[in-house]
Each structure stands twice: as C-alpha cells, then as structure tokens.
Length: 380
Image (tube, rainbow, N blue to C red; front, side, top):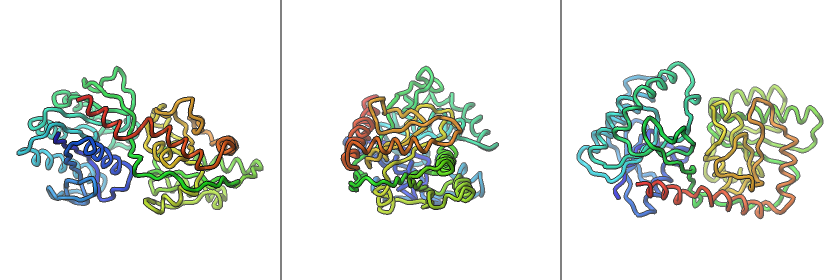
C-alpha cells in the first residue's frame, strides 16, 4: 500500500520520545512491505521525513505570531500544507497522530479523504483532558470537544493504547492495541555486576505527571530516619518540572543522591543506563486521571533489561512479572526502603545480565512494534 502518515511534531530532534515513536511506526509499516510518506515539521518548514531522517521541504511556515500561540499557528499551517500537498496524489491508507480537533483539522481530513479511502487516527493518551493546563489549553479542549463530532464523517477507526468508554470516540469505533516499541534500536545492558549501591534512572520530559519529587521526598525521609544504603537518582531531561526538583534537592541537601544530567540521548544515555540498575517511569499519573498506563518508558527500560518503578498499572505487565515495583498512586513520598528491598529481591536471583534477559523477553513479547502495527494493518 501507499501510506500517508501525518504527525504534528517538529522532527528537528529525531531522537526525542514522540518523534522517535512516529519514525518507528513508519518503519514498521515499511517492514511490512508498504511505502510511507510521513509529513511533519522541521523548524520553520513543513516537510516529508524518511525513516532515516532525511527531510524534503513542502512549504514554509510563516511566523505571524510569537509566544504561546505560535505552536498552534504552526500546526494550522501544517494542516493547510498537507491539504494542498495531497490534492494531486492517491493513497491507500492514512494514519494520523492526534493533537486535538479544530475546524482546520476537519478541513485537512476532508482533503485527505478525497484521495484516500481509509483514515485511522491514533490517540497517544486517554483521557488527555488533564494534560492540558492553563486558560489557553482549556479553550483548546473546549474547541476539540465541539468540533470532534465531525471527524466521524472522515475517520474509519481510532487506534488507542487506553480503554475508551464503550470503545467509541465521538462516534468512531476504537481499536485497542499496546503501545509498540522498536526493540531492534536498543541493546540490552552489558554490565553484569550487582552493586551494593543503587543507581536509579528517571528519563523523561519532566512533566507534572512524572512526579519525581515524590522520590526526592522519599530519599529525604529515608536518610532522615537513618537509611544506610547509598542511592543515587539520575534525572535525565530538562522539562518544566526540573526547577521544582532542583529546589527540593537543595532544600534537603541531597546533592550527593540526586544527579541532574539534562537532556541525553544516544551513546551518552546508553552509558548512563549501563550504570543504573533500576528505572523510574511515572509517579504522578493519578494527577491526569490515568490508572493503567501504556507508557513508552516502560518499554524503553524493558528493552535495556532494567527493572522499573511505577505508581500505575502497566497495560502489558501482569502479576507474573516480578520486575516492576508498584508504589502508591498518591502524593505520599516514595518508600525508599521498599525500593531497597525490591532491588535486593530482584538481584538475589542472579546477575544483572540474567535479570535483564528476563525483563526484556517479557516486555518485548507484549509490545513489539512490528506486531502492534500489524494489528493496525489487519484492522483495515
């Protein structure tokens, strides 16, 4: 098939989570034998992007406004560019990563539907209402709710990683699949030694739902109460919550136990993960109304073979998986003694590599990208 993929992302940094996920989904379509045209943005251009990162310009983006409105106008211009680009083309299937509905989005769908018989939309997170904060975003949510009913005229299926009530989104049937991950891109850890010291990785965009202040508060309580094990929390990312984490670290004098690395990727991130025996996914998803999570981070830690900590249930993790520590889904500090006990229990059974092989095999069997996108193709 000739597939069109539309993602409202800036692909100037291909290694970042959502952009990398989109590229990997396109690669899975290609591995299944199909041709894919991915349209996104790079800096001030609307572009097509290949799975190896090569970009071809479609249209410029006019910077008519600045500030908080600029990302919205950039997306509007991308939608207009997509509608114009597809006008003289034909596709068998269109796959769109959702980023709220507007009249311009509906106009783009209408243009796509004239040249493409099947249109699927992927909703990365549901419910998504509580992720959008501030007056402008609340207005966007209202507008999304008002206009989304029109999507059913042009959209054949919603693809979601989360259960949606009645399996219907604004009149469109849903396909529930696990969040896929390309395990071929990640090498399992090579470090075999189990250390008495515990290094914990927390890699994310540092948003309010990551809740890492709970771990910092837990470290404070652990050492205040006489804790003896040496733990280090490695915070990787530079999002809007970083300032809060740095202030707490300084307030409690935990500079030896909380390390800020900023954004990392590639060999530098791999090197850090080699030294970390545990990972932290999200500790604040209850703040956005999610109790069962389909996070990429659980797959990324799983691909490296690192046991991890979460305050949510994970969609692909059952009670038969002993390598995830579930902490309480509330605002209480993380019980760091429970983390120490979890670490000792997990690695009592073998070396890091032995444990890593079990972790990776379990997670990969349930979230391999090729198998997940195969379910999407089968739904056609």
